[in-house]
Image (cartoon, rainbow, N blue to C red; front, side, top):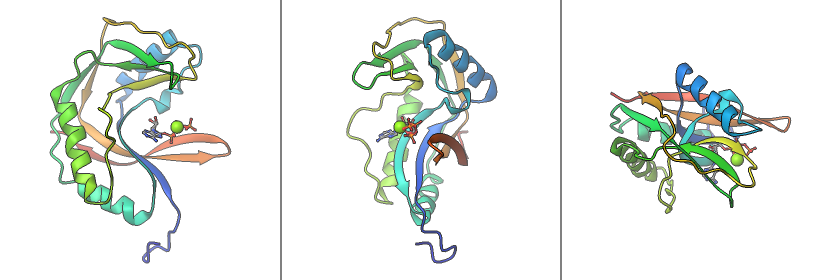
Length: 176
Ligand code: ATP
Ligand code: MG
């Protein structure tokens, strides 16, 4: 429990890339183009690290830890429609993800270990989920790319209210 605030509640948190309005609009258009039940526009994002349920103290530790991470701005070219039947997710990803993205994910994972976080062993697969519960996700390479200029990363809380999940950006760190 956080002694200062008395906040014993757990918060479901993840680090993510959060699209600017113009990019979000293009992602939303793609979501509608490629799926019947698109993810809500305001939930489109790219997860970098999923932290799960965190206390206020853990949240403070994670926030402090990533503030030392060097992030360089980069451009993501989302040009690949993919998915996996097992997870039933339809997503958009990059056929050539920039090195800077992998570097950012690695640097964040490394920094977060000081707070007890264990990064996933699986290779990071950068993707924006367009739709869920898709039985047969479509695969299509070489789409006209959605160019997303990434200038920061964020910490997001996934808030469950009355059976619905809402995402709230809690903090933001710049990429220079
Ligand atoms: P719901 O689970 O109710 O359908 P949601 O998936 O939108 O809602 P969360 O489960 O809170 O909301 O997930 C937030 C983000 O973290 C999403 O990008 C999700 O894919 C990712 N995520 C959730 N659980 C995990 C996990 N165990 N490992 C990695 N990423 C996860
Ligand atoms: Mg989920």
